[in-house]
Length: 389
Image (cartoon, rainbow, N blue to C red):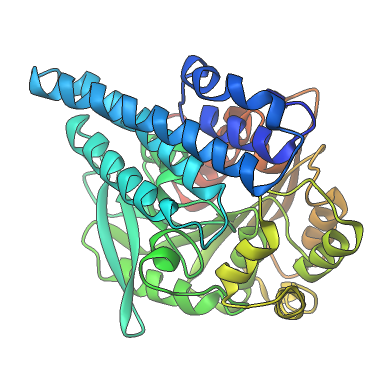
């Protein structure tokens, strides 16, 4: 993994994710060079300085984009809005939940992303999925000139990413090239569903998934009988859980295993592990699940286990996992696939250090992971790995 900061796994994950979304290494260096001496502090002051520098980068890029827009240079403006979004969202997600300035940064991120979609004419539209007495914000990406109903993957987030991040990482676009649509959903506990609608995560992932599938089955252009589920990181629990309890799912992808999240949380808490996805980790997880103490977080985490349910999966399932994943052990991926005894195609694919993409969810080199996932889905769900005709 590209380690820009010395001995700060969390900040390095943020840099790698920014690059995976299409961020510029020059932008990142401009915003981060002065932060390098602070990387080992891991305190509020360091995190807030990270926020200050990265939001300043976002504001600069947004000003430049606006100037391009005024001159009619719409594609260049859109490209800058994309980079501004990356700066704002990475600054925002690295702060404690009660850090008030993050609210404005999140609004700026959403605004920049929307402008990027419009100005660069992305084949992506915002939709709202009816859910309980509210809705789940989502992005729908469909193949151009499909000429008929197409298969579709429901893509849930992980613990701390958002639908916009997932879109920019590139799986929805790559699936569209293979003739497959994607509904990227801010499921409860992440993105807008958490920040703007107060919806919290929980073990029963099949409930929001049912809402997403209901939505797709009434959406013109989607083949109601070819809908799959995928999710990354913590979603490595959600996607197999959904496949076990939702018979309409025709394939499932766990982008990084999470067989027993309770065991992972116990280990992190007892060992004071620093290899965490975001700073203020326990505050963040409490926010995601609507809990006020570490003890409550650990208690709810015990319920996020796939033990005893994986034999219920009757569809093909892929688990793709990095050999050098420093957050979730490869043994969890092996256990996950070993227990999918009723699946007609239960496959574990390990991204090795030699091949690249060997860190958590392939964040160190997303391309090989993204390509394998999209080809597998196309082969299983009825797309075209060679590309749409």
